[in-house]
Image (cartoon, rainbow, N blue to C red):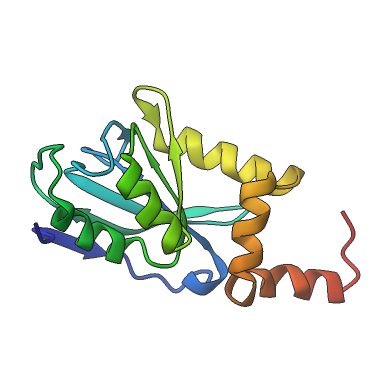
Length: 158
């Protein structure tokens, strides 16, 4: 199934290329309450240690959790460039396809709030990333690490 409605948020603030992109399977843009494959909507946020902002909100309509792989094509395309997608569950085939495009699926507890997940991610970025996050940052080094390299060049120390 294709995207039924999508909006992109434009901003003159920090360039999108300096933010880590993270996806959330959500029905309302507030909580992660959807299975990846049958998610009715996806919210993509840009995150760095100090801020976050909504970049894209896409709606897919209601989808069943059957073996129809075609339903993943548009979700996977939407998540290109993201480091992770937070969801309630994710099937084995979807996990393989996400990892193939270097997106880490992250299973969350029931009704986890997006803002709480973003805050936890920001705290992890400040304190020192876990193994999966460090690998994701390394993969996106050309895009994301430019800001951190600039800080290091100015004599920034952690």
